Length: 236
Length: 108
Image (cartoon, rainbow over the protein chains, first blue to last red):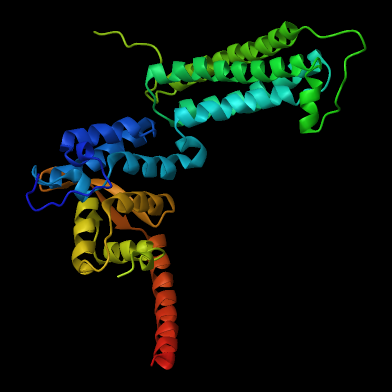
């Protein structure tokens, strides 16, 4: 690193001392743009780094590679596409849970509502954006598919359990979202485990359909040769 | 100088530089640094996203060209970009004239 460079305390020392290769590697890791555009963007930044002397700090000259990648994501993918997986997990989980909570009094209607919201609105849009526009490692894709319904299940389970403790059906919770509160008939109480089981079934049903849609869009993605594949490539 | 003054004029500055001659990202960043004489800090982190935005809007086009034995993405101003640059330049001249007049009129 050049001797006359002053260390900026806003950046961690580890990032400040990055080599050109480390800089490019960090940038590539946080860049979500996929397809041919991705290669162009990385190559362009690579050519810029080649112009810098080996002693010049790329962080000083260009900036934090993670922030740079975020700006690129925001520019090329828009707001929705640039949200990382760790932020999108709770968003999708809350959407899944909330859609179930808007249920009125009927399990059938509840399941139908959940199916409509999850499969027709959320899953196709979300998964398509993820697969067609973004580049993610395999483990992150499966993490998304596994953890999202778990968070949704947990959220719904906790709320259903609390509602059950007060001996009311989930319609009571739905009243917060505009539904009519329902009291159980006198002398009859609802088993707490019934509500939880219903919630569990609905969310995991949503998960399986999301997985099906994801695999379908992955197949289409592979056929369109965008270079994103969840299956390991066979070594020649 | 206040960096906030640069915002809103970054695109005009880039188009002005590319109107002079086509440049790749590094050359553009060095050119702007030299021309602004360090009055404004035009970060590379801001430059490339702006270039991509201008390209998406059709004002510039990036082409991979051989430059001293290396392949570089060189940006050229398009016809649409030249028209836009001319429009923005006229607007800038009008605005700076009005501001200058007001500031001088009311300055002590």
